[in-house]
Amino acid sequence: MLNTFKIYQELMARMDQAAAETLTNILGQIYEDLKNTVTQQDFAQLKAVVVELAEAQKRTEQRVAELAEAQKRTEQRVAELAEAQKRTEERLDRLEQTVAELAEAQKRTEQRVAELAEAQKRTEERLDRLEQTVAELAEAQKRTEERLDRLEQTVAELAEAQKETERRLQDLIGEVKDIKVQLGGLSMAVGYGIEDKLMPFMHRFVPRVYGAMPKIVERKNVRYSKDSFDEVNIYMEAIKDGQQVLIVGECKAHPGKKDLKRFDAMLSRLSDHFKMPVQGFIVGYAFSPEIEDLLAQRYSHIKAFKTYEIERIAAEEVV
Image 1 (tube, one colour):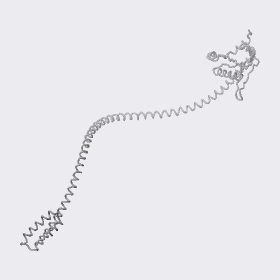
Image 2 (cartoon, rainbow, N blue to C red; image 1 turned 135 degrees about the vertical axis):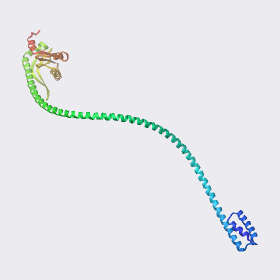
Image 3 (cartoon, rainbow, N blue to C red; image 1 turned 90 degrees about the vertical axis):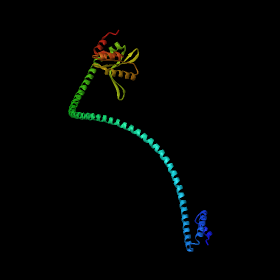
Image 4 (spheres, helix red, strand yellow; image 1 turned 180 degrees about the vertical axis):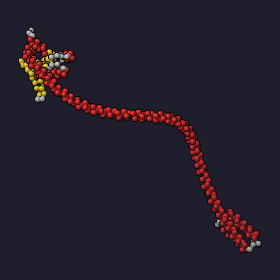
């Protein structure tokens, strides 16, 4: 007798309840149909086949579950791919815009290249002209160097001539110095000669010109300090209106501008030194028009006399 309950329990261990009940019923029916036609050994073999079928059914269900899980992962992957596709389309949109911009930029670049090509053509033309100019300059430089060579030779010759000129100039300077020394001595001798000639007339000259009576008439060095002094050609201390005054004279053969300037400065130094009024006059053989103008315009406080006038004035009667 077929133990359907035991078969049912075994099937329940391998499949769900509905399938186990269905298969148990089928086996019961088959058992009833075959119990009069098959042997017990045949049934045992059939039972083993059924167990194998149940095991295969279990593996099938497990595979179905695995397929369901794979399907779930596939659907998730499809969703991810859809999102990625969306992002890809967005990137494609941006890429299409970029490509359009690049196409426009390329168009401008081609236009710029055409302009540069034209500019390059003009540059090459200018370079051709420049090369010609450089060649001409090189030729001119060559001629300049040749002229410089000749100029250097000329300069060398001039330098040699300059050395000879300087040597001769030094000799001439030496000769001029000797002449100046001689002239200085002659000028001093002439000046002293004028002073010596005029000194005897000062006692009569001063009263007639300045209204003063001279007490001291001499040539004198007035010392201001150990190393500072003035050489006064004619030094006279006199009395005018009861007060002492100082009258000085300068004697030069031909007085010049420097003589006037130097004498005027000496008068100022003497006035500061003696703290009294100082009257000055200058005597010479002759005065140039320029010196006469200076005496009248700038040095009007300095009287000027020609040498022959001193003796004439001294001989005049006092009024």
